[in-house]
Length: 519
Ligand SMILES: Nc1ncnc2c1ncn2[C@@H]1O[C@H](COP(=O)(O)OP(=O)(O)OP(=O)(O)O)[C@@H](O)[C@H]1O
Ligand SMILES: Cc1ncsc1CCO
Image (cartoon, rainbow, N blue to C red):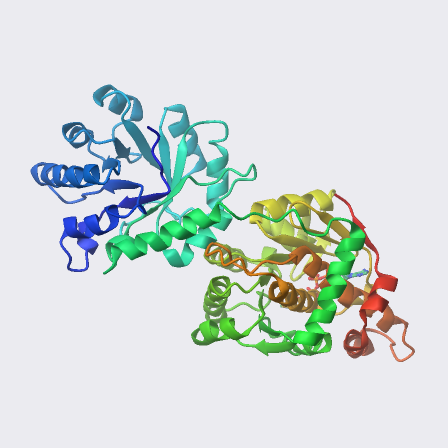
């Protein structure tokens, strides 16, 4: 019979919170939450390992849960375990197969795409992918692969029967983010998640396991809805409806942004009809996530203390189902920015990533465009394809700003041809665009029906239409501002732009909008 890898418990007696080992294991195995148990004994000698394996086998048999033994092929044979889990420096899979009874499952830990390929070719039944995050239960010999590193590993298993579980630092608090991000571009998903301390160290391991299993099962039920607006007219209608919704509901838009634009972004948010709060302290992120409608994270003048706030801010926004807009300002300029951005993306799921060509090229390691500090030089040959592919990889809406703006959610691709060269001339128009998109995302999220799915990281809503609404508001207003008699150049343009946004009505946006649905 096939093994169900959904919730794969790895034991660790050193983490038990004072409860006897078998009692704690029975608390979880008795419930249908845990689907596989791996016995991991790093310090036991052979006799002790055998004794514990026999006791564990008796218990897992009682509840019909398959038992997998870590490392020790001999112990797996002795207790007739369902499988064995090998490390990269343990017996090779082919050798282990000759020693084990036919049909025994062999799994192996993999930390790279190359290791997954070798495991697949060597006939592994499943692979343990990770460590996803740093973990206290094991000293890592390789750096964590991160949530976004898992997609390429899963891709290697396309068309095979090799199952995949992720391992390393997985808890109920980060599981939804993991499941959202750990998908290959071909939509290959994890078959399960391996958990240690979140269950073993819990005083109520049964409830901890149930929580994890509920999130895992719920994640199978969501994907990007295909029922969203399809034609460019419908997308425009959706965007304009959100413009009205912002003025009616005045959402709080929490912004962790750079010191260059904080004031103009706050005023831009007010002009849209929303309410800004510019706050960076990690200590207040949980409280602010509860009251705000959306979060903007802009790394323009990143320092370590705000990075901590950004890590926590996005994490709580995901937990409270508030959309997060990420602006990777000047990403290519330094390795500090790149390293920090990867930390952010491994900790939380953005709803929209918005950048200019240089910034998005830095995110996908493309040479087609480069950054000159915070500005962009060059552009993509096929911008529509870039945003569509990135949206699929990052599992969110992607906005590529420039003379023409491109937006995609991985299914739909839209180009917007509004704007004025003065937007490109002043500093911070991209940053203000991020604030506009965040306000529109807040309105989209608030108007969605919350499906109460614990694996969802927002309530839902058409965030592509939200991005289109944010872009149109700024760019149409820029065209109107540039025409004014009192605008003579960059200095007079910025206040006029804020005036025009505050006076802008949906009918006027409709009149000027140049939105094209490309795919
Ligand atoms: N030459 C232009 N013509 C029309 N619109 C423009 C032009 N340059 C920029 N824009 C508009 O300005 C907005 C900001 O995009 P841009 O690519 O300039 O951001 P950015 O480079 O991140 O800006 P910054 O770093 O100054 O914040 C977009 O909506 C874009 O359409
Ligand atoms: C000029 C500048 N430097 C860091 S952030 C910023 C604002 C435009 O992105």
